[in-house]
Structures are given as structure tokens and as C-alpha cells.
Length: 96
Image (tube, rainbow, N blue to C red):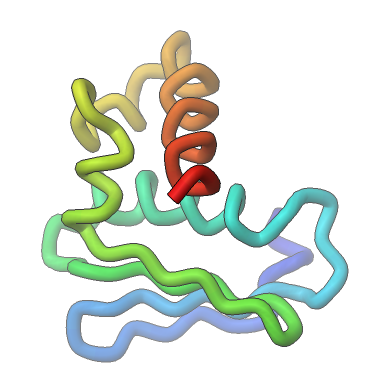
């Protein structure tokens, strides 16, 4: 994954990750996963934006918390539940 990252920036309470334009998965999936992990690990952040080529996906802390319900950001720490929690969050994100 590291080789796909072109830049990382923090401005105020927003983390922006710019990725290579060619990715092994779609940008929305990466954005949801990155937002869950980053917002859990860094409580000061309020938004995560992922860019790749001309695609940009941004999620606020509130949006991520809604996607995770009934779980919360702590679900990011549970390896045995991570795939299920992420799949459900991505499904909800894509359905909106």
C-alpha cells in the first residue's frame, strides 16, 4: 500500500491522502477504510479525504460513525471483525 501513496497532508483537522492514479481497488473502498482507521487512531482529526487521479472522496467523522452503526470506530482495532465491519461500511457508503 505504501508504494501507492504519493503524498499525505494534514491541514487543520483534515487528513488528505493522495494516491497513485492506478490502484488495485476502487477509491471509495480505500477512502472508507482509511477514514475508519485514521479517525480511530487520531481523535483530533475530523475529516479524511482520499484523492486518486481525478477522483476525490471525503468523509467526515460523523459520516463514518453513521456508516459503522451499530459499531463504532473502535471496531477498527478488532482484526476478527474488521473485514465484516469494513464491508458493511463500504456497502452503506456506495448505496447513498
